[in-house]
Length: 142
Length: 142
DNA sequence: TTGACTGTAACCGTCATGATTACATATGTT
DNA sequence: AACATATGTAATCATGACGGTTACAGTCAA
Image 1 (cartoon, chains in turn red, blue, green, yellow):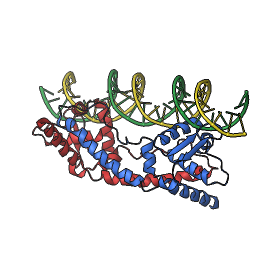
Image 2 (tube, rainbow over the protein chains, first blue to last red):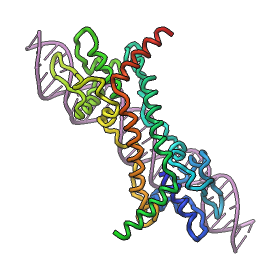
Image 3 (cartoon, rainbow over the protein chains, first blue to last red):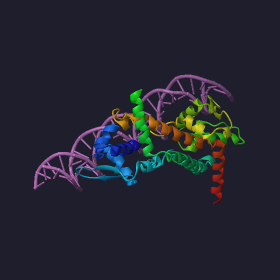
């Protein structure tokens, strides 16, 4: 959803009319509630990806170009650190496997997480927006 | 949890006593309920990683060596295809971004998923077990 | 026949997440 | 000043995923 929101703001900014992106208009595109959008944008703002202006005529803007925001930035912004869950109840500490498996799994998760992040780093919001628009136009022809 | 369970079965098999792994004993190590273990093992069996024998003296065995079971096998067995969630409600189809973003994100997710799977493929149950036991012994010395 | 084990259904509590309502706050326009 | 339009955020509800638990049926060896 965060990716969608950011792409929408970037798209809106390209338009000829200088309207600023509001949570209401974004919500229409994402097909959800403005409050949900604001919550999402709040996280993105905390990560420094967007800025908001309040009051009439206010709304949301990217703090930098869409081409310099990677999906990794978005992933980290919305708190996507926890891909794999560690066991809720700690394993049996007196068991060989139960005792030693936790740190081992942590290392494995860190490794997998690195691979995932490296992949996400390869795509920017600008890439997503460009491909989405292309997809739209292809759909119209088909 | 599935990794823990498989490592435990592999560990149990190495022992001098020829006891077979039961869901009860596995549950003790994982610190959970035998039914949870059986549910988990049911998925692993569906994926062909383990076999069970019923009745007295029954239990669970690996269908192949621990060194030939990768974490990717486990990941796929327990249905870990869905890392990223697609929007519950479909985006606005009349919006440039809303229409085209879904297939674009699908491609991005597929790419990220490939990276993750490649990483998981590099570690086997045997690796995890070896490191866990080493961790245990290191802990005893410290 | 008995005991030990798997196989499952059923139900509960918890947690995360999105949806919604309501209201406080801020700010440009009139 | 009054109003319209935004954001900011708390509170609440519904939903789904997941583990924990109980209960019971099916299976097999001793």
